[in-house]
Length: 534
Image (cartoon, rainbow, N blue to C red; front, side, top):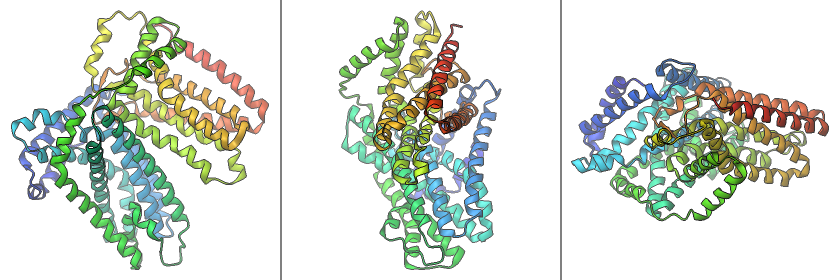
């Protein structure tokens, strides 16, 4: 992220900020300071055994975004129908950008530290909120350009006007998603207080991510049903789905088709983001005031949960020291709001996919191997294990140095057991119940295989990642760069394990039972070797 270029581009929109009642000079200074802090933090954060400089990590992240964008470009190049292609493209783009915003930047929008420090110095709430939105927008636009870069180049085949409108729509989508998310947060802030408020925000984040997942699938299904040779008439549902809005103007430019549906959708593509911005600006002071609710801890009734955790710790951890760390990490996983912000949306997106596949696929051959979609859930393993290293209260990790730890590996072992018990196993059990209900007892042995594979993936992920003590590292806006290579290596390993499972299942029940024993033995060996005292 080039700070100077970002600020120079921002200066071009000075008149817009001033017209909206924002103290531009103050806002620019705040944004400049935040970008400087981000760049200085990264040198400590983005540290990997494979790279010496943090800048290399950020470049790798950009390359991966570009690779994803390259495959998305193929949709445009091979399109037989512009409207269908752009609807699918914008569905993918919006889903990717929303999950990025939810997991990485929502904590910036909901930050209350600026209010306590800067608002008391006479800086207006509108200016403070504008600085937060602008800070996030700089990163979101950077990601958007990298993600859509190849597609923008490919779109030139439809003409320069098409490419220009395409670029403008990319920016409009970023603005629309951020402002609508902000308005949703405001509604939650008005309805809840204390701990209920924090829990509600987390639930809404997961819900929005899952909603967009379902919406993306609905858009794909509707797009498949569009007749490529007739006028487009999708009915009322198209007016509720943003990907259709933004695809409509490009269809008009590319084909000249100007039926009533396309004109209404094009109108929504322009008006909806503008209206959302105007509403958000009007409600900004109220939003910032309501944010103070996040400082209210409220009363939390966690006694029952704590007692349950204590009982589970005695089962899961034989060593007394390990049991203490298990309870400690379990408490943070349940109560740390920032951890939930970063992890739960990703979990929601990955765990909704296998359930959807149950209801969408009717082919007998595919149904017999439906359990393989459960491997999509395992993608969350490296994400959560990386997230376990970070905390907004990272300074409290000094406690690790003040107490005498006999075996530091006991801390890691307890942390892994804690997130398995508190997150992965409960969610996996819910999915297993659903799969057993639809596919009967024949799928149970495959569910056992996938569970054992999840343990194997967990241990391998631990061995590959650096051994930072849980919740001991500072969160940074660019935290997603950390261990990005290792993350994708684990995802590749998950696909390999799914392939092995598929091949073994071809040979029948006996082969699967033997495979269960093999994975069990491998897990025991790998577990013992991973947590040897060093």
